[in-house]
Length: 193
Ligand SMILES: Cc1cc2nc3c(=O)[nH]c(=O)nc-3n(C[C@H](O)[C@H](O)[C@H](O)COP(=O)(O)O)c2cc1C
Image (tube, rainbow, N blue to C red; front, side, top):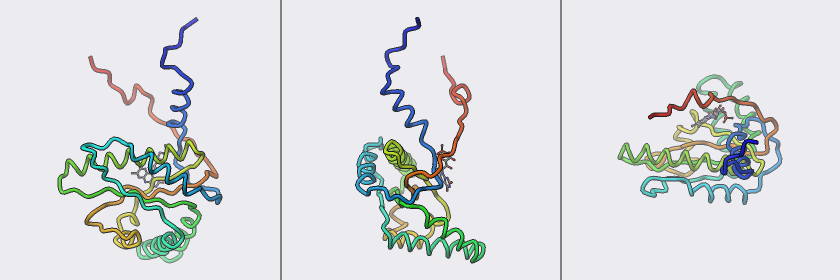
């Protein structure tokens, strides 16, 4: 009988299942997610690697008032860009996102530092998504017109000169979990001599 390698443990398989099984969720149940869970996710996520330990991230957990402001803003942005009917449709669909979290990255004048800080913030963001997923909570990392709009920064009460948005994260218990695929290992890995 073939002996399993020592690293082939149930704990590692369970961990891999979380990494592979997490999916971007678009449709959520309206069951509220405990705020304490999201705070635990954020606190844990900040153990992400960050070069020179710059800790370049900030997190903004939105409440009803700020979410309502975002819904008005997306309605306005889409109405300006397309038309009022599409704006209304978008605001209605976004009103069904139960939880709203924004991750930002501190701006740096040094382009290398900026790139590395963004990498660190991305790692922290993924940590949040995975922590939530393990707790049964799905999420969608989004970026778009709204996350670059000056009015969005006003809602958050932050300055676009000091930080930029890494992602608007919607979270909630999944209504539907889609499937996904990835290129196989031999399509992405080159093993060098
Ligand atoms: C920086 C970033 C921005 C993203 N923005 C969006 C977005 O605006 N809309 C969206 O539907 N998904 C967005 N996604 C999620 C990707 O579409 C998603 O990860 C991809 O389709 C793979 O699906 P999976 O996460 O289930 O593996 C974003 C992901 C990243 C990393």
